[in-house]
Length: 361
Image 1 (cartoon, rainbow, N blue to C red):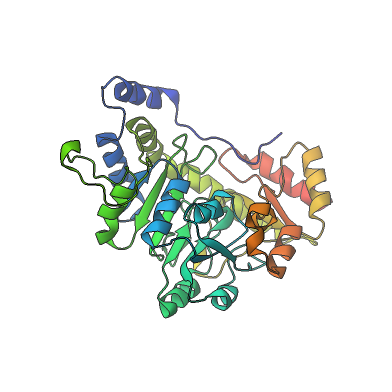
Image 2: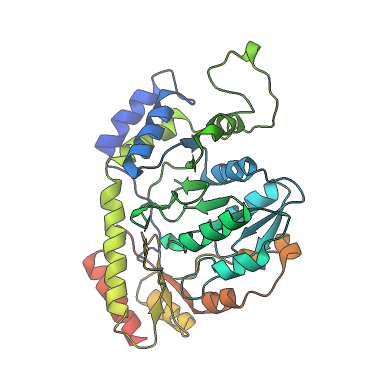
């Protein structure tokens, strides 16, 4: 089967010597390799004030706490995402408030967000689902109007652009994931970015037990709860090597995505996700839309192509029963949704077979 997701690792002759050097350096926990990875990531994507974390989920938990989210507060979020997005809100003891989604995109509907704001709302958490940027201009306008921080979950969207800049630069906070099957993996890991550099010290304490690295343990005073959310040097070494080739990986996702857009525009009975004019997707997954999604899934699977909905809307889980609400946009999108392989491993022949299989229906 042509897989819907696949792990991308550098060539062994490039990766293994670098790993061996780090592993036997005597410095394998958080140290200079982590700080160098932060620097390189920041420069590569022109994203300032970044901290490397143990996972994208850890970065998201940190972002929520830096927004001041506490038990009893509300966070407006989307159910169309991987579960960690919204479980991180529960880590804070806050209530998830579902905004509906745009059924053409799968991302947050700004007007739904506007209607869900209360005096308990402490953050708006948007997701660039499957690598397709949401309407950031409108969401940021709403957030600013109400004095509420905007968090961008960019876990699926490394390399995606909004208004000509990488996603993550509009919100007050942004997170990125380097989990196994993302555009770029470090086995596991993530990055937290923040617009306000004055939040960096607080964030550093949060990722390391409430303490600052480099200060002697006999001199520190823990005044707030922190976690062991730091990245280590081994993971950071993988990240540094990955950054050398990430443009090629991202470009192939984008080339395949644009090819599918062009081809499926000519096929009756199917549609595909579309962003606003300011956005350029990075197509972590290709998002096909069809009233016949179940039949197309079976046909593609029979042709040796993995295709599925991949994620389950988070509001289907009983742990979020306290957030139940009608979400007609989500219902329409999820019924029509079918994700297709779109990544660096999809050859020209593979993508032609996918299009031909969808044409046959």
